[in-house]
Structure formats: C-alpha cells, structure tokens
Length: 231
Image 1 (tube, one colour):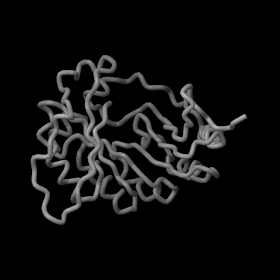
Image 2 (cartoon, helix red, strand yellow):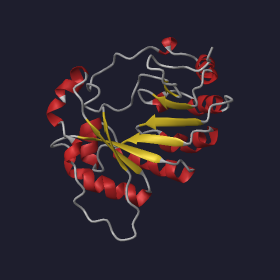
Image 3 (cartoon, helix red, strand yellow):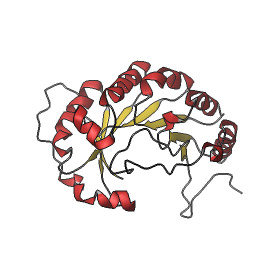
C-alpha cells in the first residue's frame, strides 16, 4: 500500500498551507470589515509541538513543501521558533511564508536563519494614503519589511497585488517598475465575489486578461515576472 497522500483524482499531495492564526493586523476592505473582531481564541490554536507533529505526519506521507500563512502569521508570537522546528523535519524540502510584511522588518533575519527561504507579500499600492485607505495600515512598515527581507537573502520575494477598478488599477505600471528595481516577482490578482465582504467589492473587479504592458522596458533591463491569479 502506498504511503503517499493522494486526492480523489489520484494526484500526489506535495504541498500544504499551514495557517498559524486567523488574526490580522490590517483591515483590507475587500477581505475584512473594519470592525471585525470575531477571531478564534488562542486556546483553540495548536501549540508549536502539535503543529510540528501534524506537519511531520504530512511529510511522512510525501509532503515536501509547506507555506506558513494566517491571517497574518507574524502576529503569532515566536514564529521564527516554529519555523526552525518545521525546517528541521527530515524530508521537508521547502518552507515559505505569506505575509503582509507589517512586522517583517523585526523578524526577517530570524525567519531566514530559521529556514524560511521564500516569501509572498501582499501589497496593493505604493502610495501611502491610498494604501491606508485600502488596508488601514502604514505603507512605510511594509516597505521596511520588504527591504529587510531582501537584505536577509529571501529569494524569490513575490508581491501579490489585488487589482481593483478605480482604486489602484492605475498603479500597475508603478508596481512593475518597483518589482524590476528590486528583483521581486509581481503577481496580479483578481477580486472574486466570495463571502459578504467579497461580494461588496465585486464592483472593483478587473479582468486581468485585458491588462497589457503599455510601458517601455529599457534595453538590458531584466523582464518582470508577472503571474495572473484569482482570489
């Protein structure tokens, strides 16, 4: 009998997303209502030892890649310690992190040293006031986190930009140039009407198949990597 984890279509499962918290320190309007407080209580969360045991079981069944997510995973106390525990599991080949980068400047070096090699960062605007309107957060903290991640040696660093009509669709060119400058990978993401909050943001939908590249890339400059996703 095979010890590998397979789905009903016979595909081998090699990748697991691990949510370490449902909490987030931003309030992106297309994701959470600004007054949302209905989070899980910490006593319901798995302990680090329990998480390591569960991921160890997945690895024994053939999983080779794990992505730490949330909510916002950096609000989970002592996350670098957990990352180190997971990275030490024999057979786990890749450990990555999805984050909004608000707290990344404080933890980037420790996370990289612990064994996290790749990160995805949510970033919908490079304009401070607009970023605040979208997320209720501080853009400077996110940029500082990105620069700390770059200095710490994370590779690749992927930027996830949710493109919204009349909100930030005029910034795609700026975001491409920003990613070229810092050697980041840009992923453009469509809004989808999932849940009450998602349905309320449906009017901001942009079909990314219509997004073209109207700007000139200087000769010799690296071409940006852009992926189109849906969320």
